[in-house]
Structure formats: C-alpha cells, structure tokens
Image (cartoon, one colour):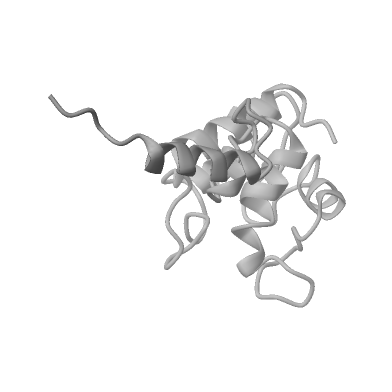
Length: 142
C-alpha cells in the first residue's frame, strides 16, 4: 500500500506558522474579519451597534435627532435623558424595562415612529439587544 505524500500539508503548515499567528488562535477571528463578541459595556455596544449601525442617521447634522458617533456622545445623549416621543428616559440606568431605547430596538407597539434601526437596516440581533439590556441593568456605566 502506498503512503500519502504529506509534503503539501507540511508546506501549508509551515506557511501558516510564518504568518505570525501566536499559536493560541487569538488572532484567527481578526484575520478572518469575524467581529468580536458583543459585551454589555458602552465600549462594545458603541463599536458594534451605536457606531456601526446607528450612525447611518445619528451623526452631527444627520436625520437622527441626536448624535451617537462616539462613546461620549452616545452616553450624553442617551443616559438619563428624557425621550421627546414618550414620557420615559431614553436610558434609565438600572431599569431597562423603563428605558425607551429598549422599547425602540425591540419594536414594542407603544413606541412613536419606527422601530430602530429603521429599514432598510435589519433589526438588531437578540444578542445585540441582550447586551444593551444588560448594560442598562448594570446601571449604564460610561
């Protein structure tokens, strides 16, 4: 029986090791353009939701009523700020159920206007919504 030629596989492994991967797989997602997992922190939510999705409208001078283009802008325009559409805070620290942002991203029937983000953007994933809810429940820290 003839043995398989392992030289091509060895060449591939040698080439991959020369690419600088640390060997623990920590850079594989980055190399493959896989977004990092969202966490319930303002930094993560800003990077993956507010800054990546909401800034299609919510930028200085944009059609959205308040900018969300940076962590500071998002915090200052959301946390403890009354909504202009309903008598709730946009983000009520520690109280996601009474945070209008949660109502808007979940598309609850009592919201004014459209669910956020509006079409043609897809709705947020349940993972994104859960991270925002958890961040609010943790007190919406900066």
